Length: 474
Image (cartoon, rainbow, N blue to C red; front, side):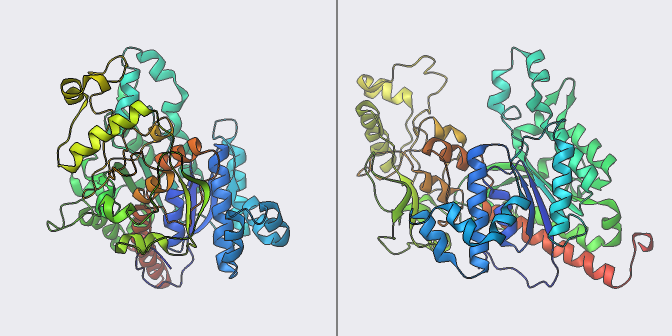
């Protein structure tokens, strides 16, 4: 069952996910009935997570989901599953491409993508997905390089978007989705804005971005979307560019219009009475933990009923709680957490400046405290969470649980809930890497709603083709 209601469609559509991470973007498209013919990712822990998710989907298809949970609980080895179900092994081998995209490897990766979609029964790719790693595009990343412009411009990560453009040119999908931090809109490569470069490259590859036409300018302002508008319990602003091949846009102006109207619907301005999903709705049904308690893998069956429609949604297809273990914290940090939680419970946001004035004995012994005044932050029960980031892999100070009786930071599962990953989604690897994967991902619920709109557009294109229309008729 999909996370959100979807229209019936008899058409099969394919998707390729570049820089896939743990699969948030691809998960949304999979739940919207797209077939993921290739996921390309280089991080070994994220690759294991993608592998496990493919197995989950395939076991569901053949009516054997209980075997997935046997694996999660450690009752069977993954190798045993692959020996028993050879087609799952072959599916993983075809569709999961564990490689770093570079000038040396991208041709080989392209061959594997073509081979995969051919073996899956497709003549080409309908949708190209991707969010090139964005550390250097973010405001924080650029700040670190502010005094080193030459080093910034020569860092190979700044040009990762060029690989995305390469696959766009070579695969010529009907539609593309390009996701990144909103900081990329003001990023420069040498003396040129990266958005300007992107638009030129998309245009040269034969694509247009309908939302930019609707805005009447190339500011990208209209393409900055907040995950909270998609029912995700998290404030997360991201650049989402949806492009359509020019010949297809001519073939079906309705398809182009469906993409354009998507931005109007989810801009956050369409419904003034919109009520965001809160942290309470997202995580308060999960088992309470004290520091150090829980499990990095199978925790156990649910201990209480869901508390909201959102928590019901997250539980679909899940036998229980996984990736739910609390960090150990130093006693000094726990006392700081207590201070911040007590004030948060009274509706007061406090910073290290307040701590310095009211409890100087609890002040951390760090340099540059004046720069990181909000280093400790409680996630408020009745608001969406702050942006979940990969910094969670280092410490949880910015994600303090609002329940003072638990006195700790978020677990991987709580962060995943705020990212809209379903409870059945197992993050592989050490807990540090699990946090990193969750923080770097696209919220699946956001992705699914993007996918459903794109499916509507592709259905319109297919209808135009069935009527015998061609781009030249437009």
